[in-house]
Length: 369
Image (cartoon, rainbow, N blue to C red; front, side):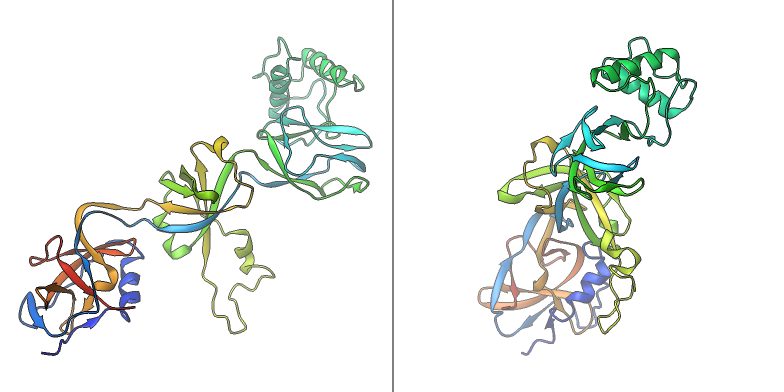
């Protein structure tokens, strides 16, 4: 007898779209064809076992290993660049970032940018963070880091710092002396070279934090499968792996903002509309142990939802039944019978199935691809 069911190859995209690319969908079986099972003729070209176990809806996506908090470091004062930190170098507190007219601009830690000349009588958050740096460097004994006033003691501490660097002991600090950043900085690239004119507001260096992170992009429609705080596994170049968690989800990747390079947004010229994407950032549990080069390709495994102890079959074992709903072909003793099933979660090429006649270890037919 000729089967009235069809392998679900042409319909699979629709099924996955309904399931949201990996989440639960329950088929509404129609029993107009007369029951749970029926006999069919002809053996399928291949079979696979019905398995019982944990099924995850997790995805695997391609990402890039990088560093956190990339930004441009602009010149603070005019002059000629006489030295610039090298690409790939790490600069810590009090280290040199660049020199203008032979005068070093040093890195100090703080969230408030260096926007004014700091001197006796000034008050503000930038004064507090200057005091914290002087204390950390051993020049600010007795300073109160929570006092926003630039006191006489602050002036003395600044002069000690200047003396240690053989600089003029003015007791004042300006944009020609320091740049503030959140922590140690890694030089990703040079935006100007020795001998160039430094222009205030124009970039000298592209810097990042020193902590390794992973970034990847997802279609905006699937971004709900990545949630902040969710654990992930990162497969590294060379075969190693690392664990981490999703730090942030959202924001257009750099190439997608304003419709991608050159704007436009819709991808005209016959290319169809460009799918909206979001950028996802992953922090690593042990970033100091990652030695792979910057911009190395990695694979990120998202955990997703997990179903415990469920029956599952390969997705391409599904049949679209002529009476509606879905089924599989069970192969036993050289004979084939159709078993109607209800679908649960999709994940990693398999689908959760339930049905009274379906048992672990049964062989189900799959098409020869």
